Image 1 (tube, rainbow, N blue to C red):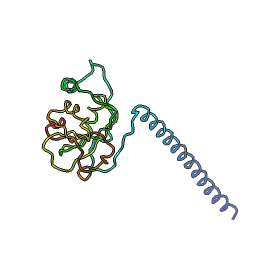
Image 2 (image 1 turned 180 degrees about the vertical axis):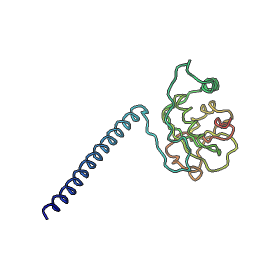
Image 3 (image 1 turned 90 degrees about the vertical axis):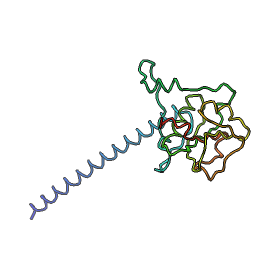
Image 4 (image 1 turned 60 degrees about the vertical axis):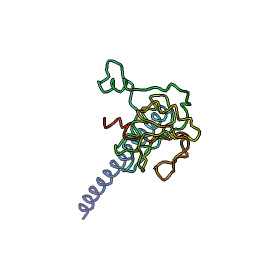
Length: 193
């Protein structure tokens, strides 16, 4: 009878040790994951310098959460990058580059608002947010309540400056966050061309 207790005791003792070791490994792994997440979040915040929104909704613009592209040496640039630089436009009028700008994708091309957000940031704008526009549009329009967005039209192929704002129902982002709202049409669809 004593032999049965020893076998059972050895079995349960080994089982307990296995659970302790596995539990310790899980705790260590979770600790590493948490530390890595905290460090990467801190790096992203320090690199971006602005507050960006990440959307989980699958129907949203695909590039809403895209990381900004890294600068490359001139010798390392691809032909596509060189073409983009050749097509890069600048603003000759005066504009506040810190003004909140909302870029809305008015086309069926996924990621177009995100691409224009990147282009506006490359042009020097610091507070740019993407979104989607759900009504028909006949051309790219730059809305601003005081007309301050007129100079921004120079960055687009076929943009019209509109004094006043559009209705909230036509978008998926709060327009109160922007002083200038740009609705991108197919004439400025740089991803499909």
